[in-house]
Length: 488
Image (cartoon, rainbow, N blue to C red; front, side, top):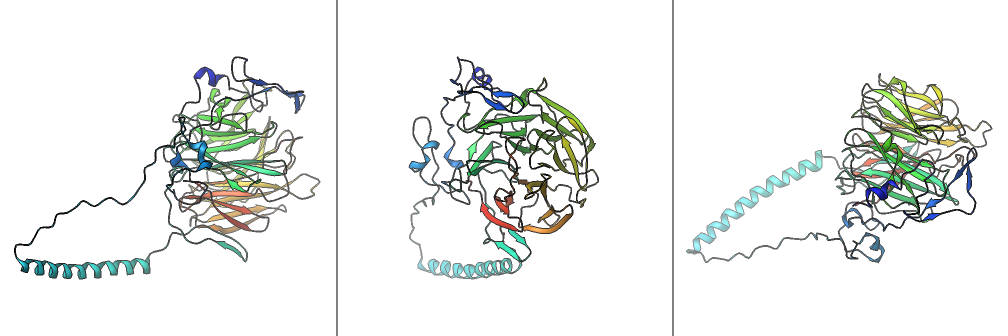
C-alpha cells in the first residue's frame, strides 16, 4: 500500500551513504549531540525520525515463524503487527472439506435391480482397484522421491529427511535471491531478499541475538520486472547500517530501495539510483558489494555502477568494463582485502562469453585488471555466488575466496582459494532445484570502520531446494545444513 504522498516520499531522498536530513515541515529531525566523523573529514548530518505506521502485511504471506508450506491459522497476540489499520485480522479463507449435498434416496422399483447394481459395482471396484494398485506399485518402484539438499565435505555429510516440493505464496518459483549482513554489538544481522508469486519483492531478517528469522516482509515497490535479478549491499558507515536492495523494473532499468532499522519504514524508502537511469539487458543478472553494482548491457558487455561517496555530481558513475560475459551471465562481487580501504579493491566473478568461470579486479576510481581464477566451464544458465573470509593473522590483510556454481546435474560445485591455489570440489551441495539462484554472504565492511573477520559464522549461502529457500553454512572445512528459511 502507498506509504505517503509523492511530496512526502521526495523528502526521503538521500545521498548514500548518508541519509539527508528532512525539512522541518517533514518528519522530525533528530540532531546528534556532535556530528559523527565519517571517512575523510565528512560528517554525518542529523537523521530523520519516521512517524509512519508499520506496513500492513497480508497475513497470508506469513507463517507464525514455522518452517515449510503455508499453515492457515488464526493470528496470535504475537502477530499484532500483521493486523489491518482497524485492528482486525486480515480476512483468511479457511480451507475445509466441502459439505456433501444431501441426496434423496429413491426406492427401487424392483429389488432385483438392487442386486444387479451391487454385483456390477463389485466387479467394477475389483477392476479399478487392480489397475490403481498396479500404478501405485509401478510408481513406488520406478519413481524418485523429491528430496531436500544435502551438504557434504569429505567424510562429513548432513542430510535432512525428504520433503515434497512446496508451493509458497511469498516465494516465486525460481525467484532470484540476494543477501547482505553486518556485525553489530558482538553479534550480526542478515537481510535476505526474494520475489513472491505476485512479483512483489520481500525480505526476511535474521539476528544472532535470538537466532531466528523474522516473518516475510513486503518491500515498498510498484514497478518490478517479473523474475527480476536482485542485488543487496550494506553501508556500515552509518549507525545503524543502511542496507540497499537493487532490482530491474519492467523497462529493464536499475531501481533501488534503502533501509535503516529504526529510521526508515519497514518497506524501505526511495533510493537515489532511481534518478540515475541505468538500462540493462533484459536478461541481465545483478551483483552488489558496496559501493559497486554490476549489470550487463544489451550487447552482453558488463557494466560497473559505482557510488562515488559524494565526490562527484551525479553521485553515481556508470562505465563499461570493456569486456563481455555470456548472455545473462551470472555475476558475483566480493572484497579482496580484509581492511577494504580505498581504492576498495573487489573481485568480480562472472561467466565469460566462452563459458568459463572468470574474474576481474575492480577498483573504486581506477581502471581494473584481470583476475585469474579457476577457469572451469560452467553451464549456460548456471548461477554464481561467492564469499570472502579474512586470512587469520595475515599481515597483508588477505582473504580466503570461495565460489559456488550449479553444475549440469543441478548439484552445486565449490571452488576455493586459501593458499594461492584454486581447488575445486564437485557436488558439495546436492538436491538444489534446477536453475536455482545462489546467493552467498560476505559481511559488510568499510576501510577504517569495520574489517572482515576470520570467523566463519557469517559464511552462509542460500539456494532453492524443494521450492523453498535452503540455508547452508561453511565452517572453514565443510558445509553444515541449517534448514529452510521460514516462509509461507
